[in-house]
Amino acid sequence: MFEHFTTPEQIFLYKLGMALAMEYEAMELHTDLDNAAMGGGVKDLVLAQAKENRGHVGMLKECFELLGREAHQFSSPTSKALGREARSFIGKVSSPLVDEVVLTSLLEARHHECGVYESLAIHARAEGVPGVAGLLEQCLREEQDAIGAIRSAVAESAIAASAAAGTAPPTQ
Ligand SMILES: [Fe+2]
Image (cartoon, rainbow, N blue to C red; front, side, top):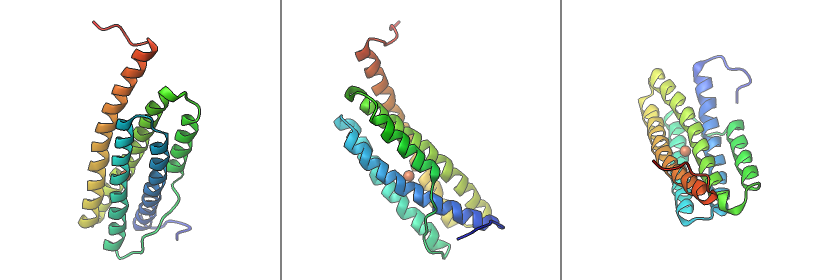
């Protein structure tokens, strides 16, 4: 689409396209994390995240529509790298530790998505496109809420794994 950016709008549209690619990458990652997850609770969390991500794809497409542009994707190298790292890591850990890797992979991916939505929302607000900014802010809030839920699950899983391994710190 652009070979060289000369306006903030071009940068915004490019980043919006990267965000769409990021969400599609996340969908693929969720499928793999769901297949890898061992515990029912972790699987449920992954599926809930996957459902929310499909909503984000819809909201990003709506942003393009509001801007009068065709929805498009631009490759997101960071999302691809996060996915590769998660798949590789899962392949390297023994079964009782897989869920911890699934959860931390989810947490890391969500933090990346938060950063992307935060900068897009700030830009949309500054550019005076409140409908688009509102959708991006909604995505950001959902990513932040998801981080809270995943963080609790990571903490529970880490405590359980430490206790099982006999490395938990002594309680006072
Ligand atoms: Fe998302």
